[in-house]
Image (tube, rainbow, N blue to C red; front, side):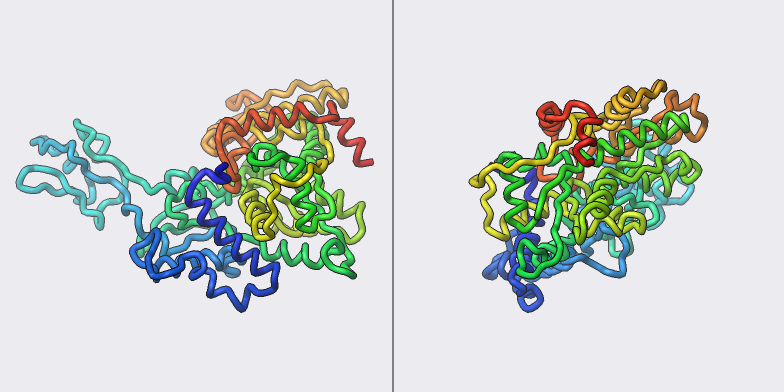
Length: 478
């Protein structure tokens, strides 16, 4: 069974796997230059024009798999030499141009970018074009179109442009670290930094893997894990994690239960709130709608809340979060979260870890994952947080009518925030549930698989919860 949606994901995984294999054996630094040759043996290229360029790009992938550019605070990086196969993009004249006599495109262009050949067919001078789109609007044949690169189309916050070398460039002040560009780039030229080597170092020195180790490592797994690793059972994934060296595996959904209770109370007290569970959504508000920052929930995310609980109740604990989200890697670096979350892995990286240790998780016995409530588990999909907040209102006896605006993807978030910028009446609600990824966390860039079936798997997983109320789930923590 296929473990990944795309071949680009598989390429990324192979690099991660080889880096992890060497890191476990303490041979990474001495063998780092051999990884590209291991993945592309011989003298024949498999994807690029020549084997030397292919290996050079793989070398850059290895660097990002080891943590990337330390001078770049963003967790998303561009591999410049891999970003050269896409068309430059911008406005282009297609063969639908009929060479008409009106020349409306020329008349409307204020920059002199449009000329005509002997057949009256229009041509656009890229050095003069300002990408205003005026010519496209007046063309009677819609012969002028805007062609954007996949990464630009994927980036809904307009953080990606092209540099002088025509490679993608990310504006860190606009980027929300959602990773949409990572998943959509057909050449894998944009990657999220991996902190997998750091995770391996933590695991190797723990009491489970080392005699004399003085700390235990806890895996906090996102509820969207229920829709991943489709070739194995969830209990087998839990066992695989323990074989990697984790002392215990805990559902981040327990943190979601805790957040739902607190967020319901905060909403009832303030009367207007935007959710704080999705770090990409929170960053989007801060960068694009700073006037609305006051409305962001003061609760930390389920990841941070649960990690804080573990650290405060368990001496010498280390916490590694595992989920679908590249933005979580950035969240873990925040001063308010850093004391509680030691590092973050994606599901892609977890698959690489399993295979680097030659663990066939489908053949393992089934372990048990600590139970959260149905409501905590459905945080993984769009609308889940709203359902949980409503349930938390009931369980706490709070007399407040929640009027949710559920935002599925950053474009929907933008529309809701624009309305709220005008007034709460324009918004037509009192609670914005913001999820940067389409479908919610199940659409995260670090997922192994993406698609509608993931929502069904999450709901099924939620129904299997032994704890039927949020209160019952939280009582397990006491």
